[in-house]
Image 1: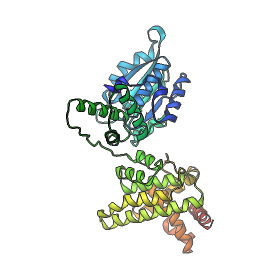
Image 2: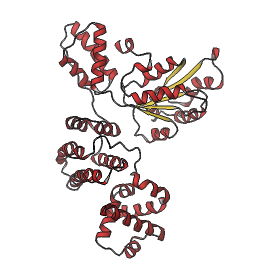
Image 3: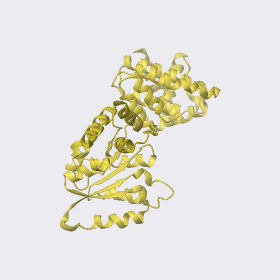
Image 4: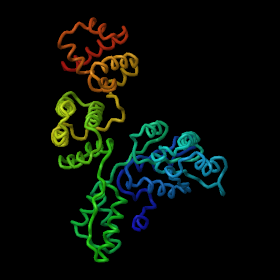
Length: 405
């Protein structure tokens, strides 16, 4: 198979995700006992496994490769890995433990497997590399806090085209530009799938079969979709990514909002971005209120052609935190009071306290200030204690000062 025949053995010959690849090579080159494990996160077919093997080969490590989703139980993992961790290998060779698909270990069949992995990554006697396809799962997020994280994105179409052209040239096979483009469109940034599809396609051509390229599942998860949208070069690209973006409309709004606020934009950049987002929020609110789901067809167009155009080019980055950066410091210092305020308003608006803190609080502050509400009386009616009352009044003044600027 071409995927094996043309698999790079040198980590510098891989394509795409240059920054993450170089960081990983540097991590293994400088690894010392006690260092955190590496966690490689990204969609299938972008080179995570190839990078591990190529880097290990270049640095003379022997890879102990386990697919975590097939080795869910503590007993199986412990039987294979414990001897490596408790004794030196023959000839004192360097060993790297690679646990692939750790996101697949979470399920009904996980009998202590995750507990063993948690203990394993604290061991630190040999380099440990974990790989996962998604990071939204709460258990993966816990792994993130204990590891060095290397994120991988889908391979850009142009790089896939160059790599396929290189392989086809080596094989002495010619494909039309149209056929090559069909293959690239069908795989949605999955290089391994592109190579396999090209291989199958050329076999079908040799056998005289009619070539049919099956359209693959091109859905993008919530975080991956946002990354693709924010790095897109044109409105048309944005619209294509938006159509493939999985997730509830409110979840998309929330992650966009968090990312915009966390990007530390100027007021001049922030206002048009939030105005465009607020129009989208109005549409989602109307859909939820009227249950007219047919209006969702306008959601993608507004997101691509209104919100994206309002974002300053290259300045908005996906936020890793669910709390906007302006609130982080105050939440750390005033967590108890902020939480109480969120809970009180959550009962009134019938939403979560997190939604209150992330989305509603600045608007509540403005309404209270503009309508000259007696804050002392209002806080008493709301049932806030003295500490929470002071925090709310401080928040109102802070938001008002920002608006006046």
